Length: 117
Image (tube, rainbow, N blue to C red):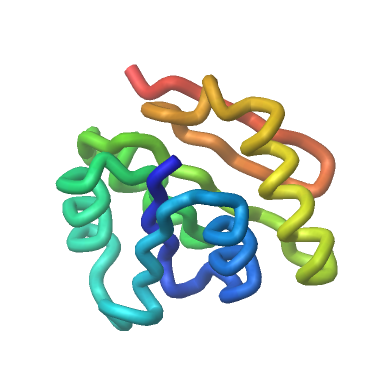
């Protein structure tokens, strides 16, 4: 899969995604302090799924009806970095077909995947 990771995403998650064969553009490396709107536009140009811990992407997708290739919102506070990485990769392995074009929320106890109408 092709991802754009917001700069708030832990570096270790980005590294593990890359090690798993995913293409990941990491905003912290190339575009620090970019606006969410700019990052979403950049992701759309590359057909990349946004990975973020920023709830503002929900505002862009739901209230402003912005087009997207998919958004994964990570709500994994309290987990160790290894547990976060393992959890994200497990969701991608088990539910990869559902994620493109959807708004996915990953929490320690649940995964919610919603299409955006």
